[in-house]
Length: 178
Image (cartoon, rainbow, N blue to C red; front, side, top):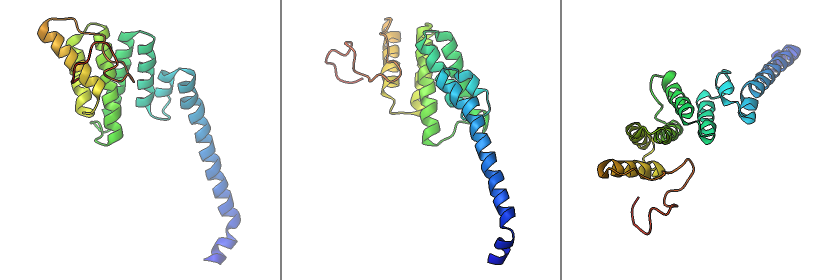
């Protein structure tokens, strides 16, 4: 075996060099087509590049659009990200990461629906977020707030934003529960 490898060491070194160059070129392509567009704020371009995770890029685009207060566009991007998750296998994965991402997307959809006064769609999105991530306290809070407003005929409060911890507002005023 050693004799075989020794005789073909030039060929093996050439194959290793070709493999290294191929991996390096793929890394450069990913850098310029996916990573840099995400970094400079063009996640839609990154999602269409074919490199990296298009769901993450679309979700990032939806978050940025939401933060820019273009709620309809943010909702469309979040819906695209959610449908992209099931595109490959026909269903959303059952692993923890897929469920977390799906729950986050649905939560963002709920927020955008609330902002454009689509309360029933927001309720459905929060329910879906809780199906994916049952421990999502902001989704629970927003869902219960909307359901209570729907039953009582009230307008409801401002709601939890992405990354905001529940219970930080003045609306609780010492009350227990969510």
